Image (tube, rainbow, N blue to C red; front, side, top):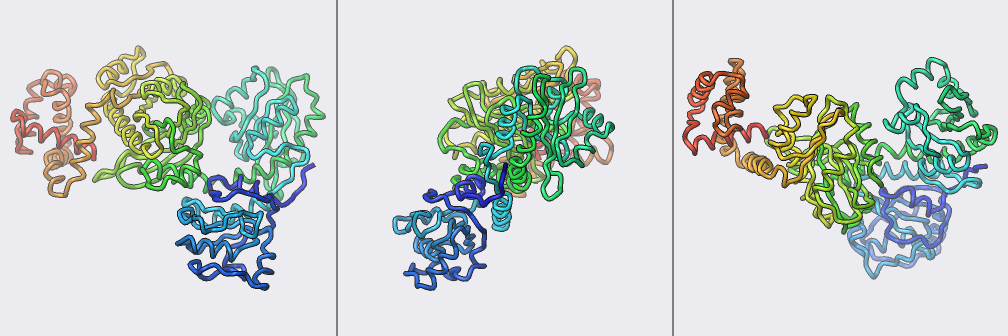
Length: 609
């Protein structure tokens, strides 16, 4: 019921969203027959800066041969005249992919009639994707194209799962070959144990996979070319599953869990048709994923870094220039816990867009993945990534970041409280998750300020919990930490979640900013600032001592010898002896205000580096 066919131009544009940025509208929805580089075509231009000319009869014949062709024109476009020349040279093609930045040369003198005339539809390559990736992706789209005769036109797995569920009355799960859930659709409020655990964790439970492997059921599914049945067991409903194959290779499975009132015979027919309809969607999902994640990461990096040209990145991530934006920065999450955290955040907030980010410099530095979305104020879109707050002289700090777009203005305190409430049950008892909330902004080009602030805030929160190894059963450690740092959090039995805004930890953030300013000075200044702390660290390394930690605690207690002794678990006489050794090694007095300030700044900068 599903026939292979050439894709239409409108479908190709939709399936390349973010990779290609449309500059003109589709006036004539032609079928795409091939994808070629311009230099592989006989009439490719050699000089994009040349003035346009009237096509000769021979050129007109060449243009006719381009019908249904998507041409990748890699030569740079440096002016409106150059763009006009490229469009004229490839007149007759269905679409023309031009280099990044071409949009800046659009002018009144350029004929942009689209495919209704002789000029092709104009698409601009995203700066975050290579020409070879564009070529491979476009050709895969044409190879995997379908004309859905018996199915609605779906372009993602979630929509496909919903259609199957509504058609059959069963709950649907679409999985990859490793049994990871890619999409699901539930009917009714009642969920069996297996499905509930799958939805909560974002993956099939390990014990369930082991059970299916041991019984040989998964092996049967992998080898089968038709629907495989598994009868109901206790409270677990009956299930039908069909494998998705491309040229014999297993690329995924569709599972249907259905109650007793559903007739399995029609369900099997639906699954067979669904498998054919799902094949091109699955192929696009699996093939597009590796470099799509990278270009989304780089697009988000550009936004967080405050790029001067946000147009391509905003288009790729479907973000408006004006709105209500806020950035969250999380401490690093263990690799095995990150998928669960990502799943819970995505489930708790609507319209999450996942991305990885990698950039260098004083702003965001490195990336991972997760997502959050709107605060309670309304629907939102979120883009997430892992990134470092700032580079220092000795390294970089790495965080998990989330760019949140809200439907209406929301305060940082509201965002903080909503995140805590949403994640309260997502962490094991032994783990602590700290995060910072940047001040909300109303323009995309101001997002980098919110991100920088959030990164400083989460560093302040993390530093404020450094001396507490974990929460006590009664939450007393959390209470002390929150009272000392000004953070808010959940000391529940599921772990500690501590969040803060700039108002909560303003003094600590100022200290971190001062440290970064000192570390960005010239080498002689950095040497003088770090000298005392480095001397103590070297002495500790040679003598297995703790003078640097002693100074750190003494500074943190504002010179309160009794409190410092208590925290260090030493007698006050031992503390005095250690302070004497610190003064001997550094040549600075802890009693002299200016020299004591030098010692404090040295420790601050040393810890930051």
